[in-house]
Length: 136
Image (cartoon, rainbow, N blue to C red; front, side, top):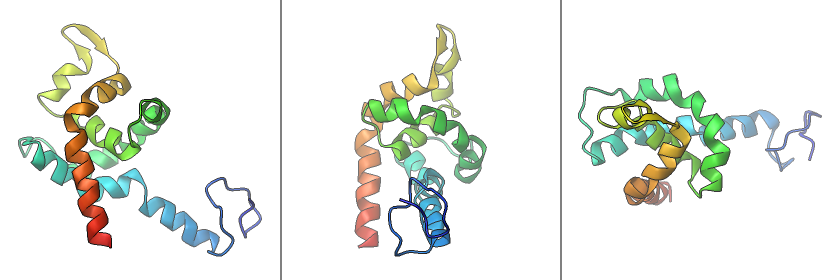
């Protein structure tokens, strides 16, 4: 459906809300917003030692790379935000030793995230559930 400003926009499905407000809403619901709100909590819940990470800086530095993995994570049934959170672990010790260049050879980050998901699924789902309750 065309946007009120005359452009074609696949994500805009309502002419009720001005285009610029829909764009702001899409960003507010982006993985960057999720990381800003929840990455530090996730790292704390899995006992990742601080100060090896900076939750805000990680999202900014590495969040864009996740778009290339979106389809493979979706095909495997991972919510994108969960995949992004686990992907951020790939830059933290001890997880960083098990992805990309490893002693056993190359481990692709998208595959690594999918393989790690079951280990963190409950924690990530609990974070989402608490966030939904807080918004209600």
